Length: 357
Image (tube, rainbow, N blue to C red):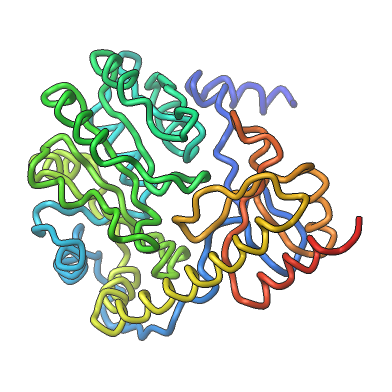
């Protein structure tokens, strides 16, 4: 590192100097023609754009999006905040409720990496209560830590394992968390199993917060549009922290179109196709001698434990198929995550798997 670079680095906050950034699929990169590493949809749909208002700053919370998503999610508009992807919702919650250098969040590894990254960048400590052997949150252990944390982050379906949070355990946690901590349930993938959403609990538990997104089932990862569902007082507090113009005009227009009756029908058709392909792939994988375990099939992906994950990952990469390796995560040795793409892409995965090494 040059002297000037060293000097600039030393100007940064200590937490940032020591930080390893979140390794998103795009940062990791790779060379290939079949991209199944980022849990993206195989298509995005068609949308119209009116450019006549691009000279004006957008509304902080575009009402056409707020009202449409509130109706879709079954909540009141005042219970909803539109954000730049679900990631901004995570960031805002930590910035709003956690004192830097004093407070902590709790997460249950292995899980989505941005909870930890957002905490670290805001000088907020992390308490990790790993998932149980059944890959459920250890609710007793979490409850025992509530006096030490401001926010508990749970992911359902969990990324990358696909497991769903047990509602009875969640309700027990929410009761214990009253006036002590927020409990955030990240439902980025809930459209693939909507009957297991925890949104109905919002009416009874003010400490519950739910994170949603248009990135997965709606096929709009490039739009960066997410939602935080919570008690109106929580939303009011988040509105104090969110930047003044978070949702660009084109994003609001496309999001509103995606939430129309026809847009929702398109999303549900996409979900049905993905779920069908997913179950077919899971069945084929479970029969293969190199496959040791196929994890819970609740998102738009499958986490799979192979006899030799590194070798399988390398074989797929040589065939131009880019997957996501989770072997470095606790308890996930030899585990590879496969995004559900098109029928052709799933066939390509199986073809490589069936080839002799």
